[in-house]
Length: 357
Image 1: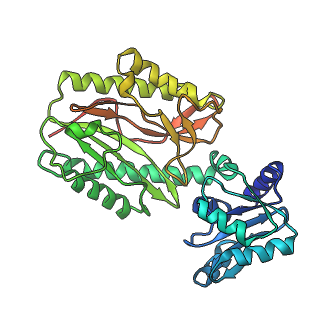
Image 2 (image 1 turned 30 degrees about the vertical axis):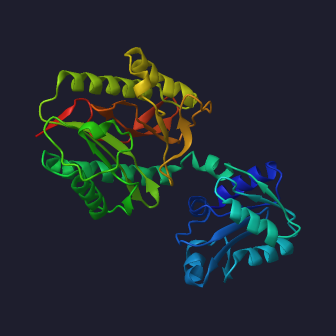
Image 3 (image 1 turned 180 degrees about the vertical axis):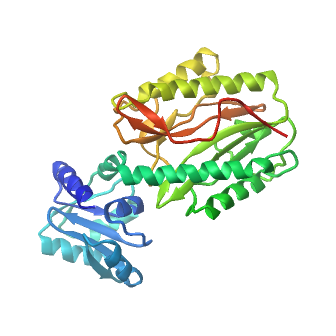
């Protein structure tokens, strides 16, 4: 934690603020290890404080040895003002991407003469590059999702509701050690597979359906993200063609992935293949995103993101084609960026369209 805190101090000093107030739960955990559900951090250039209420003070003291734990009751901004005054802080940085307008106005009113400045993305930029422990946690989250998919395969058949498949996926992930599902599980069958985020419904799966499953596990706070598309019964020629096209696009993006490449170039490696086949308008989202303490975090593998990927980033690669009224295909892996290449963490096979009956 100390190394993360020192790196952040360099960043917020460079942004022209004397201290940083952290309220985002993922950022709070990343910088302190605190697993409670209520609390905030104040990081000055020399001291670190964790504010929380009576329920969590003992827990915070055990989990956060690098912080002075301060018990609060009622409005935490009153205690914050006391410590800002004690530290002589007159310019405070805030997480503008996370605070609501009302929260900002309350702080502005309660903190009086302290100047407030939003400094966005400082912690998130640190989080984008994972250390060995973080990578290990993500790998375990990936393994749990892979294993759950194996367990649920016999249930994916005609006559079964989408929600039953989602329920069993989440059950198996938890039974094997996951803290929970990484997000609301997507199981979209038949025409609903053309919905990129078609969360599981009461629809009964039928013969000939495409079924897209997008799910993930959480382990020690870190997420995994996987998508596979299967077909119920013997696939039609068009289903095979669309599947192989998406797979080719995904593999092209994975082959391009390495430290030093622009995020937009990875997106382009997948998008060109789909566009050349005439389905560009049916691929309306980015090729992937960072994953870690949040299911979506930096970087964004999209045409607009010109940032350079770095060794240690963990991203998803997930192109898709969606044809309203017919169905869709998406294939997604979680991938670790390395110097000179990458390592695919997801193990579930994808080379052929899986036919289930």
